[in-house]
Image (cartoon, rainbow, N blue to C red; front, top):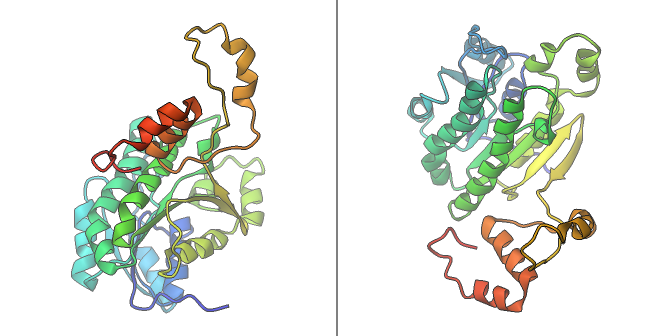
Length: 307
Protein backbone atom coordinates (compact mmCIF):
# COMPACT_ATOMS: atom_id res chain seq x y z
CA UNK A 1 0.00 0.00 0.00
CA UNK A 2 1.60 3.24 -1.15
CA UNK A 3 1.49 6.42 0.94
CA UNK A 4 -0.53 9.16 -0.71
CA UNK A 5 1.32 12.47 -0.64
CA UNK A 6 0.33 15.99 -1.68
CA UNK A 7 3.73 17.69 -1.81
CA UNK A 8 3.76 20.79 -4.06
CA UNK A 9 -0.05 20.78 -4.15
CA UNK A 10 -2.13 23.73 -2.98
CA UNK A 11 -5.54 23.07 -1.45
CA UNK A 12 -8.25 25.64 -0.71
CA UNK A 13 -10.85 24.59 1.85
CA UNK A 14 -13.88 26.72 2.68
CA UNK A 15 -15.73 26.89 5.98
CA UNK A 16 -12.76 25.99 8.19
CA UNK A 17 -12.82 26.56 11.91
CA UNK A 18 -11.32 24.52 14.76
CA UNK A 19 -13.49 21.54 15.63
CA UNK A 20 -15.22 21.45 12.25
CA UNK A 21 -15.05 18.96 9.42
CA UNK A 22 -13.20 21.46 7.22
CA UNK A 23 -10.43 21.67 9.81
CA UNK A 24 -10.05 17.87 9.67
CA UNK A 25 -9.68 18.09 5.87
CA UNK A 26 -7.02 20.76 6.33
CA UNK A 27 -5.13 18.74 8.95
CA UNK A 28 -5.16 15.61 6.79
CA UNK A 29 -3.84 17.30 3.64
CA UNK A 30 -1.30 19.44 5.51
CA UNK A 31 0.06 16.39 7.33
CA UNK A 32 0.81 14.84 3.93
CA UNK A 33 2.65 17.75 2.41
CA UNK A 34 -0.03 19.99 0.92
CA UNK A 35 0.02 23.75 1.31
CA UNK A 36 -3.41 24.51 2.74
CA UNK A 37 -5.35 27.76 2.46
CA UNK A 38 -8.34 27.87 4.77
CA UNK A 39 -11.36 30.13 4.41
CA UNK A 40 -14.10 31.15 6.78
CA UNK A 41 -16.53 34.03 7.05
CA UNK A 42 -17.85 33.76 10.57
CA UNK A 43 -21.51 32.82 10.33
CA UNK A 44 -22.97 30.36 12.83
CA UNK A 45 -25.57 27.69 12.18
CA UNK A 46 -28.22 30.05 13.44
CA UNK A 47 -27.31 32.42 10.62
CA UNK A 48 -25.83 34.95 13.07
CA UNK A 49 -22.33 36.40 12.82
CA UNK A 50 -19.56 34.80 14.85
CA UNK A 51 -15.78 35.19 14.97
CA UNK A 52 -14.27 33.79 11.75
CA UNK A 53 -12.24 30.67 12.45
CA UNK A 54 -9.57 31.42 9.85
CA UNK A 55 -6.77 32.81 12.04
CA UNK A 56 -7.11 30.21 14.79
CA UNK A 57 -7.23 27.38 12.26
CA UNK A 58 -4.02 28.62 10.64
CA UNK A 59 -2.33 28.92 14.02
CA UNK A 60 -3.17 25.35 14.94
CA UNK A 61 -2.16 23.95 11.55
CA UNK A 62 1.21 25.73 11.58
CA UNK A 63 1.77 24.75 15.20
CA UNK A 64 1.29 21.15 14.08
CA UNK A 65 4.00 21.54 11.43
CA UNK A 66 1.76 22.22 8.42
CA UNK A 67 2.04 24.87 5.71
CA UNK A 68 -1.09 26.98 6.02
CA UNK A 69 -2.53 30.42 5.53
CA UNK A 70 -6.01 31.89 5.66
CA UNK A 71 -8.37 34.02 3.60
CA UNK A 72 -11.42 35.38 5.41
CA UNK A 73 -14.26 36.15 3.03
CA UNK A 74 -17.72 35.45 1.67
CA UNK A 75 -17.78 32.54 -0.80
CA UNK A 76 -20.91 33.91 -2.46
CA UNK A 77 -19.81 37.47 -3.13
CA UNK A 78 -16.02 37.25 -2.87
CA UNK A 79 -15.11 33.99 -4.58
CA UNK A 80 -12.85 35.66 -7.13
CA UNK A 81 -10.98 37.58 -4.46
CA UNK A 82 -10.50 34.48 -2.33
CA UNK A 83 -9.07 32.47 -5.22
CA UNK A 84 -6.95 35.39 -6.42
CA UNK A 85 -5.34 35.64 -2.99
CA UNK A 86 -4.44 31.95 -3.16
CA UNK A 87 -2.85 32.44 -6.58
CA UNK A 88 -0.96 35.58 -5.51
CA UNK A 89 0.58 33.68 -2.60
CA UNK A 90 1.26 30.32 -4.20
CA UNK A 91 0.90 30.64 -7.97
CA UNK A 92 -1.31 27.58 -8.30
CA UNK A 93 -4.40 25.77 -7.05
CA UNK A 94 -4.85 22.01 -7.26
CA UNK A 95 -7.62 21.10 -4.83
CA UNK A 96 -10.86 22.85 -3.86
CA UNK A 97 -12.96 21.46 -1.01
CA UNK A 98 -16.32 23.24 -0.85
CA UNK A 99 -17.06 22.63 2.80
CA UNK A 100 -18.67 25.90 3.95
CA UNK A 101 -22.20 25.58 5.26
CA UNK A 102 -24.80 27.62 7.07
CA UNK A 103 -28.11 27.48 8.82
CA UNK A 104 -30.48 30.41 8.74
CA UNK A 105 -33.46 30.90 6.48
CA UNK A 106 -34.17 29.24 3.12
CA UNK A 107 -32.49 31.96 1.04
CA UNK A 108 -29.34 31.92 3.13
CA UNK A 109 -28.99 28.15 2.81
CA UNK A 110 -29.45 28.28 -0.96
CA UNK A 111 -26.95 31.15 -1.17
CA UNK A 112 -24.22 29.49 0.88
CA UNK A 113 -24.55 25.87 -0.16
CA UNK A 114 -25.51 26.22 -3.83
CA UNK A 115 -24.39 29.65 -5.00
CA UNK A 116 -21.28 29.61 -2.82
CA UNK A 117 -20.20 26.19 -4.06
CA UNK A 118 -20.84 27.19 -7.66
CA UNK A 119 -19.06 30.55 -7.37
CA UNK A 120 -15.98 29.07 -5.70
CA UNK A 121 -15.76 26.31 -8.30
CA UNK A 122 -16.17 28.82 -11.13
CA UNK A 123 -13.42 31.05 -9.75
CA UNK A 124 -11.06 28.12 -9.17
CA UNK A 125 -11.77 26.31 -12.46
CA UNK A 126 -9.06 27.89 -14.69
CA UNK A 127 -6.39 27.16 -12.10
CA UNK A 128 -7.60 23.62 -11.50
CA UNK A 129 -7.46 23.08 -15.25
CA UNK A 130 -3.92 24.45 -15.33
CA UNK A 131 -2.99 22.00 -12.58
CA UNK A 132 -3.65 19.08 -14.94
CA UNK A 133 -5.12 17.07 -12.07
CA UNK A 134 -7.54 19.48 -10.42
CA UNK A 135 -9.88 18.09 -7.81
CA UNK A 136 -13.17 19.44 -6.41
CA UNK A 137 -15.10 18.03 -3.47
CA UNK A 138 -18.65 19.32 -2.92
CA UNK A 139 -20.15 18.73 0.51
CA UNK A 140 -23.74 17.52 0.26
CA UNK A 141 -25.60 15.88 3.14
CA UNK A 142 -27.62 12.85 4.16
CA UNK A 143 -30.44 15.41 4.51
CA UNK A 144 -30.96 14.80 0.78
CA UNK A 145 -32.87 11.67 1.86
CA UNK A 146 -35.33 13.91 3.68
CA UNK A 147 -35.40 15.48 7.10
CA UNK A 148 -38.14 16.60 9.45
CA UNK A 149 -36.66 20.06 9.87
CA UNK A 150 -34.88 22.51 7.62
CA UNK A 151 -36.37 21.57 4.24
CA UNK A 152 -34.26 24.34 2.74
CA UNK A 153 -31.11 22.59 3.94
CA UNK A 154 -32.01 19.31 2.26
CA UNK A 155 -33.03 21.17 -0.89
CA UNK A 156 -29.74 23.04 -1.10
CA UNK A 157 -27.66 19.94 -0.44
CA UNK A 158 -29.60 17.90 -3.01
CA UNK A 159 -28.80 20.52 -5.65
CA UNK A 160 -25.10 19.84 -5.09
CA UNK A 161 -25.49 16.26 -6.35
CA UNK A 162 -26.69 17.53 -9.73
CA UNK A 163 -24.06 20.26 -9.73
CA UNK A 164 -21.35 17.66 -9.12
CA UNK A 165 -22.47 15.49 -12.02
CA UNK A 166 -22.54 18.48 -14.37
CA UNK A 167 -19.15 19.76 -13.24
CA UNK A 168 -17.66 16.29 -13.62
CA UNK A 169 -18.82 16.05 -17.23
CA UNK A 170 -17.40 19.49 -17.99
CA UNK A 171 -14.15 18.68 -16.23
CA UNK A 172 -13.19 15.42 -17.90
CA UNK A 173 -11.40 16.98 -20.86
CA UNK A 174 -9.54 19.33 -18.50
CA UNK A 175 -8.43 16.60 -16.11
CA UNK A 176 -10.62 17.97 -13.32
CA UNK A 177 -12.33 15.32 -11.18
CA UNK A 178 -15.38 16.39 -9.17
CA UNK A 179 -17.12 14.32 -6.51
CA UNK A 180 -19.54 14.98 -3.67
CA UNK A 181 -19.76 13.60 -0.17
CA UNK A 182 -22.69 13.11 2.19
CA UNK A 183 -20.76 13.07 5.46
CA UNK A 184 -21.77 12.06 8.94
CA UNK A 185 -19.22 13.37 11.43
CA UNK A 186 -18.84 15.13 14.72
CA UNK A 187 -18.64 18.82 13.87
CA UNK A 188 -19.48 22.28 15.11
CA UNK A 189 -23.02 21.82 13.78
CA UNK A 190 -23.60 18.55 15.67
CA UNK A 191 -22.29 20.19 18.83
CA UNK A 192 -25.22 22.58 18.49
CA UNK A 193 -27.77 19.76 18.58
CA UNK A 194 -30.08 19.59 21.63
CA UNK A 195 -28.44 17.28 24.13
CA UNK A 196 -30.75 14.27 23.94
CA UNK A 197 -28.05 11.74 23.17
CA UNK A 198 -27.24 12.99 19.67
CA UNK A 199 -23.99 14.72 20.62
CA UNK A 200 -22.72 11.73 22.58
CA UNK A 201 -23.62 9.41 19.69
CA UNK A 202 -21.67 11.49 17.16
CA UNK A 203 -18.74 11.94 19.53
CA UNK A 204 -18.51 8.17 20.07
CA UNK A 205 -18.91 6.88 16.53
CA UNK A 206 -18.28 9.58 13.93
CA UNK A 207 -14.78 10.99 14.14
CA UNK A 208 -14.35 13.57 11.33
CA UNK A 209 -10.92 12.14 10.53
CA UNK A 210 -12.64 9.13 8.93
CA UNK A 211 -14.33 11.47 6.46
CA UNK A 212 -11.16 13.49 5.91
CA UNK A 213 -9.20 10.35 5.05
CA UNK A 214 -11.60 9.37 2.26
CA UNK A 215 -11.80 12.94 0.97
CA UNK A 216 -7.99 13.06 0.80
CA UNK A 217 -8.09 9.86 -1.26
CA UNK A 218 -10.57 11.44 -3.69
CA UNK A 219 -8.36 14.52 -3.95
CA UNK A 220 -5.20 12.64 -4.90
CA UNK A 221 -3.96 13.05 -8.46
CA UNK A 222 -3.94 9.27 -8.99
CA UNK A 223 -7.64 8.92 -8.11
CA UNK A 224 -9.57 9.20 -11.38
CA UNK A 225 -13.07 8.75 -9.93
CA UNK A 226 -15.36 11.61 -10.96
CA UNK A 227 -19.05 12.49 -10.97
CA UNK A 228 -19.81 10.30 -7.96
CA UNK A 229 -21.40 10.80 -4.56
CA UNK A 230 -20.42 8.96 -1.40
CA UNK A 231 -22.20 8.66 1.94
CA UNK A 232 -19.65 8.14 4.66
CA UNK A 233 -18.99 8.27 8.35
CA UNK A 234 -17.27 6.29 11.09
CA UNK A 235 -15.11 4.48 8.54
CA UNK A 236 -18.05 3.26 6.43
CA UNK A 237 -18.33 4.46 2.81
CA UNK A 238 -21.10 3.76 0.30
CA UNK A 239 -21.67 4.88 -3.29
CA UNK A 240 -24.85 6.96 -3.68
CA UNK A 241 -26.62 6.61 -7.04
CA UNK A 242 -29.69 8.09 -8.69
CA UNK A 243 -31.53 5.16 -10.21
CA UNK A 244 -34.87 4.38 -11.82
CA UNK A 245 -37.06 1.30 -12.13
CA UNK A 246 -37.66 -0.64 -15.32
CA UNK A 247 -41.06 1.04 -15.42
CA UNK A 248 -43.97 0.59 -17.80
CA UNK A 249 -44.79 1.82 -21.31
CA UNK A 250 -48.43 2.77 -21.80
CA UNK A 251 -49.65 4.61 -24.91
CA UNK A 252 -53.19 5.04 -23.56
CA UNK A 253 -53.46 8.78 -22.78
CA UNK A 254 -55.93 8.39 -19.91
CA UNK A 255 -55.25 8.28 -16.19
CA UNK A 256 -57.52 5.28 -15.54
CA UNK A 257 -55.13 2.56 -16.68
CA UNK A 258 -52.38 3.59 -14.26
CA UNK A 259 -54.26 2.14 -11.29
CA UNK A 260 -53.45 -1.30 -12.68
CA UNK A 261 -49.89 -0.47 -13.79
CA UNK A 262 -48.51 1.52 -10.88
CA UNK A 263 -47.25 -1.59 -9.08
CA UNK A 264 -44.93 -2.35 -12.00
CA UNK A 265 -43.75 1.27 -12.10
CA UNK A 266 -42.82 1.04 -8.41
CA UNK A 267 -41.06 -2.37 -8.64
CA UNK A 268 -37.45 -2.02 -7.52
CA UNK A 269 -36.11 -5.08 -9.32
CA UNK A 270 -33.38 -4.50 -11.92
CA UNK A 271 -32.78 -0.81 -11.33
CA UNK A 272 -31.22 1.29 -14.10
CA UNK A 273 -28.62 4.03 -13.55
CA UNK A 274 -28.75 6.87 -16.10
CA UNK A 275 -25.48 8.80 -16.28
CA UNK A 276 -26.74 12.06 -17.79
CA UNK A 277 -29.89 13.84 -18.97
CA UNK A 278 -29.43 12.59 -22.54
CA UNK A 279 -28.70 9.09 -21.30
CA UNK A 280 -32.05 9.20 -19.52
CA UNK A 281 -33.85 10.42 -22.66
CA UNK A 282 -32.20 7.64 -24.66
CA UNK A 283 -33.33 5.04 -22.14
CA UNK A 284 -36.92 6.31 -22.33
CA UNK A 285 -36.80 6.24 -26.14
CA UNK A 286 -35.54 2.64 -26.02
CA UNK A 287 -38.42 1.65 -23.75
CA UNK A 288 -40.97 3.30 -26.02
CA UNK A 289 -39.83 1.12 -28.90
CA UNK A 290 -37.28 0.56 -31.68
CA UNK A 291 -38.54 3.39 -33.88
CA UNK A 292 -38.25 5.95 -31.08
CA UNK A 293 -34.81 4.62 -30.18
CA UNK A 294 -33.66 4.78 -33.79
CA UNK A 295 -34.83 8.38 -34.00
CA UNK A 296 -32.91 9.20 -30.83
CA UNK A 297 -29.76 7.59 -32.24
CA UNK A 298 -29.98 9.91 -35.25
CA UNK A 299 -29.90 13.07 -33.11
CA UNK A 300 -26.86 15.33 -33.29
CA UNK A 301 -26.31 16.11 -29.62
CA UNK A 302 -23.06 18.00 -30.08
CA UNK A 303 -24.89 21.31 -29.65
CA UNK A 304 -27.00 20.05 -26.74
CA UNK A 305 -24.46 19.15 -24.11
CA UNK A 306 -23.67 15.73 -25.55
CA UNK A 307 -25.08 12.32 -24.80
